[in-house]
Length: 196
Image (cartoon, rainbow, N blue to C red; front, side):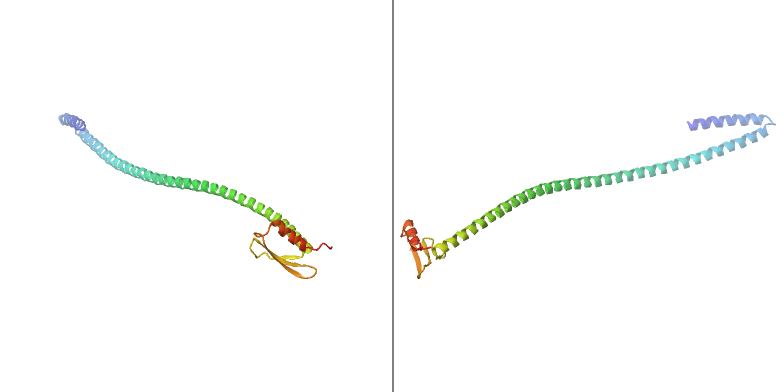
């Protein structure tokens, strides 16, 4: 299309030149026309240069924009990976927190059970202390009444001790496997003084 336009332009110029040459006074017109044509050609040349520079600048700007876009996409991908990593860490932290809460609840229940067990043992110890005091009182009372020091280091079937009667101390050594309980009981009560 540009070649066709240029041919038409040359044809017109040629016709103009021929017409001007045929006229003698038109030499000046020809000069003016040539000057104008040269100015137009210079403007076209400048326009082409400007257009080429603009195209070059546009391509450079497009390259920069494409590079910025590529960099932005890379940064976005890196940020998305970081975000995914943080979300994974948050999920793991939430799971650990849930485990810790569950473990804490279990430990709390164990602690409550231990506290209750300690309360029961303390109560049992208090009861045992009361029973022990009662038992000591009864043992002391028995001792005051019967004056027998029992030997608890012997076999369970042996009833052993020393009776401190009004006259003399008398040893006691009875085998419960050879004597009946009523015999042993009667024997021991016979040692107790009835004179109070």
